[in-house]
Length: 146
Image (cartoon, rainbow, N blue to C red; front, top):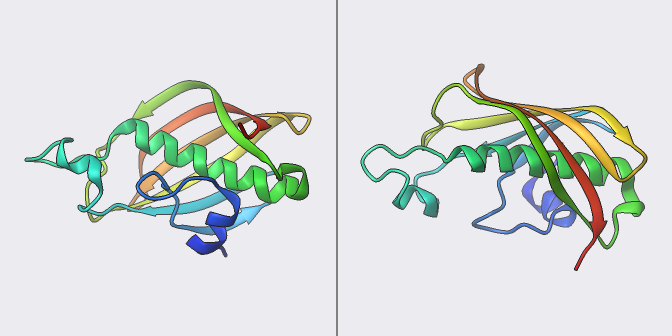
């Protein structure tokens, strides 16, 4: 549904911190499914861990956050211009399996509720080969860009 060029138009993130490569499904104001192709040439693998590379859990959660920011941007349209999405809380976070180079991380984010156009509560799950690798509940807010 959306390629990386489309994602660049919605998110301020760029390599090496853009963690959404493609959007596969999107229902505005409801849910989104995106992918992150995990490759060995990503800089965090130099130190995490050199003998057995594993994607840091915080980056998996960040991928969920960026995926939800795409959902925000597509849902709110023009109201998002000049604004950015920030994390507020992360709850019930669980890491189930490691994510390694060569994996395709499929990120599912569902909007649980929203308070106006400013604060949303979401539930995210990351999958590799149809197995849950991570999940979390989180909230985010929209603010003006600095």
